[in-house]
Image 1 (cartoon, rainbow, N blue to C red):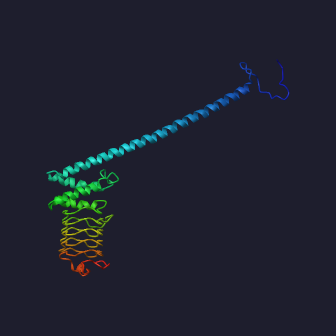
Image 2: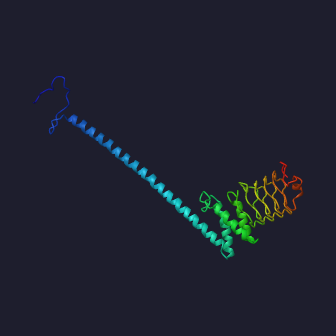
Image 3: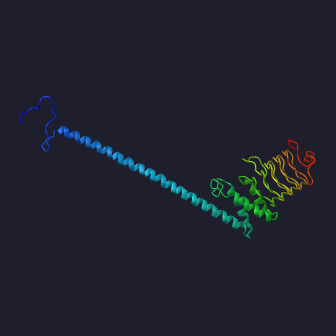
Length: 271
């Protein structure tokens, strides 16, 4: 009714809405609350969407990364087979190129090494197999020299390999020393080879040919030189404690003076 006042104790809420009979101020507050509810709901939805995309994205990237690793591994395997086939070629130029490229399987930074040198052991085995049949020539030397780039030659089977003139020794600037610990070089030909500064502790040189070989400054403790040919071999500065020379021929004087009656080095001092 015109001019009516609100009952005592009731707060005035403003003029009534013509449609609803609800005070306009209440409607405004309700609209404000509704907008707030919508904003919160939208935020939750978008947060869920972003979270879903993030989860799916991580999964997809994981699958793609796995596929890339598989593809890379397959490519490295294919390259390895191609190089091995080239080494068996009758074309000398192709053989030489393959002998050089084989070293890339020892390099973790190359595409063939692929960060883990997965074919390093196989590469050593292939080179060793070829060197058992190889004549002493340039390709043979390239293959033999390539072994120094292997991550390790520890316990490697190099029996009967033609390692003549091979350079496996340490040279200034090298980041690591060639590891020949416990390697098997039974009847290997190391004529004129350099093993300067290598670690060949426990290595087997039984009946090996070491004519004019350089083993200076090497760690040769416990190595087996029995029945080896040592004409002109040099051991200056090498550590030979426990090394065996029984039956070896042309043992250098500075080594023979260190041997006991069983042909074993008992001195702990370098040669």
